[in-house]
Amino acid sequence: MGATLDDVDESVGALRRTLLTISPIVLAALAALVWFVVGRTLRPVEEANRRQRQFVADASHELRSPLTRIRTELEIDLAHPDRAELAATHRTVLADAIALQALVEDLLHLARSDAGTTALRRDPVDLDDIVLTEVQRVRPSVTVAFDVAGLSGAQVLGDTDQLRRVVRNLLENAVRHARSTVTVEVREEPGEALLAVTDDGPGIPASERERVFERFTRLDDARSARAGGTGLGLAITREIVQRHDGAVAVDPAVGTGTRMVVRLPRAG
Ligand SMILES: Nc1ncnc2c1ncn2[C@@H]1O[C@H](COP(=O)(O)OP(=O)(O)O)[C@@H](O)[C@H]1O
Ligand SMILES: [Mg+2]
Image (cartoon, rainbow, N blue to C red):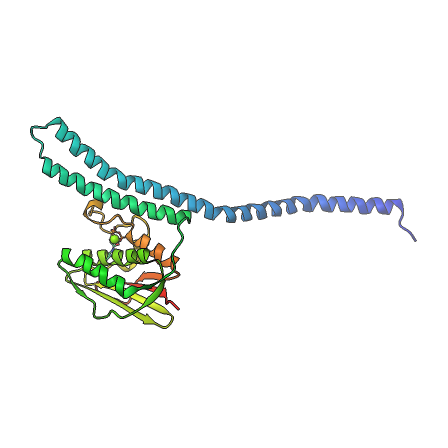
């Protein structure tokens, strides 16, 4: 027996009812899916935007203090030329100008690396040579002793200037915090080159060992940018090391003082 018209009508009616019942559910599910996918896609973009805004705000804040000091010093001297101590003013203004220059150079480095516009050279670089020249460079101006007995040959492929900057940043931090001695090791290990800079200073608390690699982190807030760094040194260090396919971290196994360890793929 074939279906009657009534049967067909009933089937169509049932179909409509079913569709009417499930379509809101399907729509809601679709909407949820779209919301989820768009949310997931945008979240990293929003996070990047937030970090960029924070970066600009922090950078402006760091630029403002030395600029304000320079302006105040000059205004006071101009207002009271009879009482102006020019040599003292020159020294203050010069110190601030030097700090500003270092800060702007660090900011430019990070801005360029954020934009991905700098190509990395890949030349054979002897890490031990870089360490020796950098140690010779800082040695005359500090009182701490350097222990370089643990230096042996290690070659990596990379950008000499950038790797020099890594060594310099780590040495400057170690020298600033050391009580009496800074120890530098360089050696080849299976597949990688190891560079370690150790000081016998106060150390970095376990809870801060990752945070020190973030931009503008200075654990000692009392120390002004003028008295030392910009809080960008370790952020730049990590950025350079990572672009060389390596890693840098605070050695968690060291009880007193700080041991910074850089691992880079070996040349060849
Ligand atoms: N060897 C170290 N010993 C103790 N604290 C350190 C050491 N190296 C870095 N730090 C801490 O990490 C912070 C961030 O270092 P860095 O990024 O080089 O910035 P900066 O040297 O400009 O302050 C420093 O301000 C300091 O508080
Ligand atoms: Mg530093």
